[in-house]
Length: 283
Image (cartoon, rainbow, N blue to C red):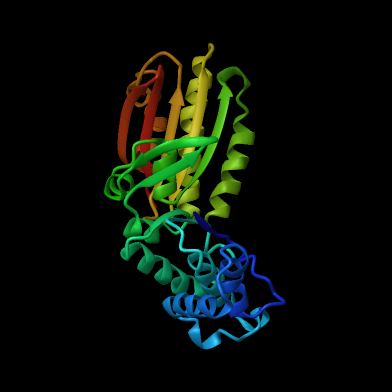
């Protein structure tokens, strides 16, 4: 088993070839000429053969990572672990490293890759494992994982969702603090003034209505923004009796009209004892 690190971990005082051939010579006791021939074979595989004698300090980040891959392959492992192999690279150098890894996988080398490059993972993986909360959160084939994720955190990650969440017992809920935090969130993720206003209006009308009902209960307010699609969604979860609050006759007509005018599609469900009202926020 070999490993390619996110920060290269090359020996800066050695040349490219010396980095690649050190382990075969010292660990496998390979003769120097044989090790050099082996090293050149793998440098050629990653497109670095012409820089075999260069000092490491003269290489770009993408070139260093390709040398690190060649160094790993020179020990001829059955499995290669890649730990965020592009995270330390300038964006312009990412593609050259991903192309090398994609070619290795295509040629049948087993690779375990930790990455945030979703398009790359979709194209190269035979199995996708999503880690969250200290363990395996969800795993599936690439097609199922990216097209029909099951867990909420998986959905948010795949869709590049930026999530705002405010949770409180109803009797402790501070509407002004909630709205202030929501304004900060909307500003951070570039909501238009109209969309930000609509999010706050929906929040104010529905939360105020729940507070007027009084009693105990929990309230969770969420706003999500999908970077890929621009979709903005408002979700209200609560344990206040009454079901769908938009259909509650105690909600005055003006408040109901304000909420509906701010929303596109509106859905109501129940989930684990919560009323769940979700709506798409119009621009």
